[in-house]
Amino acid sequence: MTETNEQQPFQIPQRILVLRDLCIRTRGADCMRCGEACPKDALSFPEGKPPVIDDAACSLCGICQGTCDAFASTSYTLTQAHADARRAAMGARPAIITCAENVSDEDDPASNVVELPCLAMLSAELWAALLAEGADVQVAIDMERCETCAKAGGPAQALYAERIAQAEEWTQRNVGFAPSLPQAANEGLFAGLANAGADGDRRSLFTDMLSQLKDAASGTTRERTDARLQTLREQNERFAAHQRLDLGNGTQFNKFASHGRVKRAMGSSRNLLLQALDTQPDMAARVELSLPEIDADACEGCLRCTRTCPTGALAPDAQDGTLTLDWRYCIGCGLCESACPRNAITLTTKPISEAAC
Image (tube, rainbow, N blue to C red):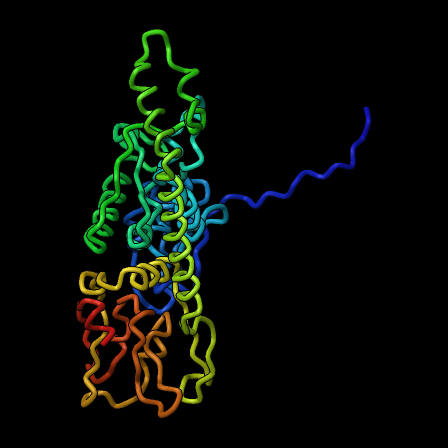
């Protein structure tokens, strides 16, 4: 028996992780939204600590990721899902979003298909970012499979439907429905010809082909492609501009803050929402956030609210120490309202268009 020194490629184990810095339970909140969404009851909640994941019970559906930014997967993140969907929508075809349960062993999905652990892993903000960018996005899903899915089960269907509906309301654009899963074998212009049986609809097939050939000969296809590429370039420029925004993630030195620094953190979903707003500014009138309203007369400047704020949305101004709010970071947890000894903070719901004024 010959020995081999070949090393197997290292693979990161697939797990869902809790990002402690983004979990408001570490600041005293009793939030359990993730537990309510988990279809496998795989989360437990020690007092004053982040949720603990039972890896044996977890099905890696990723629903917690779409529910709260405090969760991330070692194998597939919201940022990756957004990038994959944008890439799939680059050509003349739509981006088809489906789940692993909907793909059988016999399927060979086309290159514009994005396969997820579960559609409910995507947040409303991610759907909104895709729609705001003008991406043609469709879902290919068998509703009956959702009911019997061993990974997530029936509740997942209600979750992803709710999140898509929310994104459609924000953007005033729609996610489509693909009646079937596109296959790689049908991607080429002539691929369908070889598969058309004697009783197949050859007339329809050739009519479609002739139409495509006429488009190509007249330059229509090139014009459509050029237009789509131009749109993509513009989207990429906006994306790059957004990345250059002074979001201030990480630690900022501030002599008025506790320990002389302000730590700011922004999760994937909020970042995607800001990208959507940057691309489609009129959304701001339709997206509502729960934000603290500060009574300047009642506020005594003790800054207790800033010490309990999990994201750094509330912080003393670096120049004069006065209390400031950056709505972009605020997740509406209400911890600042509870911490204020003077009742100077009230959580209110308002459109972003008012908050940004």
